[in-house]
Image (cartoon, rainbow, N blue to C red):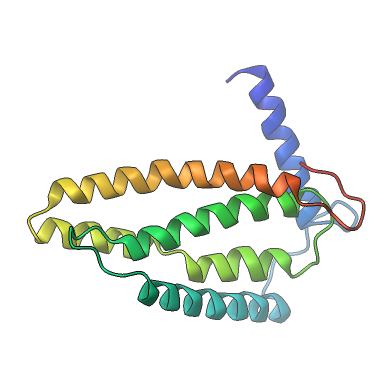
Length: 164
């Protein structure tokens, strides 16, 4: 790995550790935390509902390409990039990561649906479209995350934090 890349990864890891554990630089003791569980559950419920509603709003394709799942996952990748950069760029509210990232995005995005769609395309005699769907989902997912990282850096932090 190039030395510059190692430096960037170390900085990202340090920024994430500081954002996740802002108190005394030590991680909290392991264990179930009822407040965090509630935050994740609330975010997950809202994310799953948003996924369902958007999935119903995106029309089916005549080609069999699952545009609804693809659209949801690309929006989720974009949001992940924005949230990652924004949350690492300052001192986010303590519930931001469990609610927004683990809960909301966990409920909104759907890897299992992606796999199911690939299987359905294969069973329908469209294995080539299934492979194309998988490849495009991964490649454009990375592009969406990268775009989200750029967007997230441009969001001002009202509390004087910088960007990661």
